[in-house]
Length: 225
Image 1 (spheres, one colour):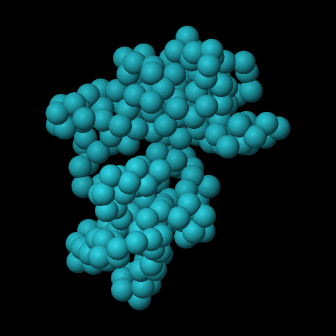
Image 2: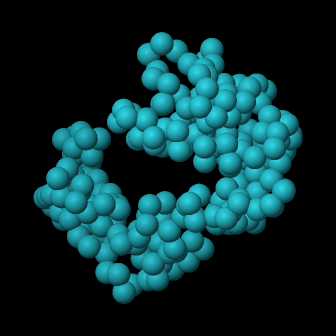
């Protein structure tokens, strides 16, 4: 939609697509389909040469005067990066902490270090629950995952509970992921994911939250799972 508005004002646009079928239906003015997994639109991490080739291919579509134009980026041009680590593929370690609230309090201290090192930049904040109260959000998720009724005052009447749970879960992961990176700035996504899902109390809480949402009959809960 944004591309069409820009094009109507004489500004040429191009884009990168990760799902060819969707792009075929939407028909943006110009799009380059890349055969990479979600989160890797430019290809293998740290492969600057490949990333530049992908960008050049996408920008090269601007020479097309009219559209819709959909081109395929050749698979043989670069190694396909691995998909992200999923919780289901991570084995839970022995000795995982039992107190998710205490663990979250500790991670808040690490996350404060992240904020200091990164001039306050953070992906945290989707749920609207202040970081200073996120032990309460962790306890809320724990209670829900255990099958009990649970809610928080930050959830407004117009936001369905499954969606708010998803926002809290995303903020919890952000708190932990950024906190981890504060101490190990060179850590990769796979390392962080294996740590979170295999060694933290929060990871186990979110596994139980996922299972309860997935077992619900309504589509919104299943989508949140």
